[in-house]
Image (cartoon, rainbow, N blue to C red; front, side, top):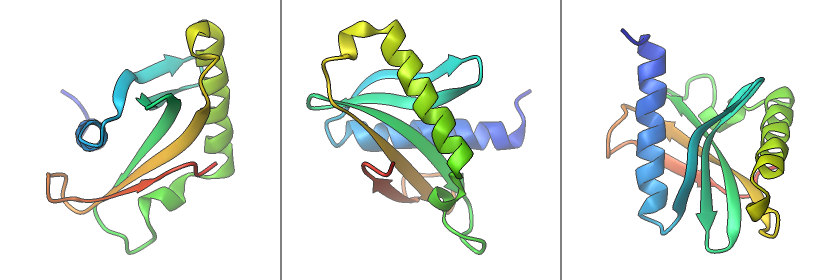
Length: 120
């Protein structure tokens, strides 16, 4: 049985994926793993390859979900993106950016979803 926080994370990622697909982004990979972590979503926004971190918090009492991405996490995501590009050279010609999907409230289609583009 999956831990409750992992299940919520998986649901948040599915919600984020649906949200972005409804805005014409195309899925390249999800939960792309490497030895030191993973990238939640890798998508194509027209010709731009987008590495997306999905963050969820039910309440914002102690800040927004996007505010939990500390410098060390940013470095891990950037390293993962570099490794992804090394292993998938066909994407080297595309411009890249790093986005965050911040979800608050109960995980549902009525959740508050904030899409932050080119955040780092």
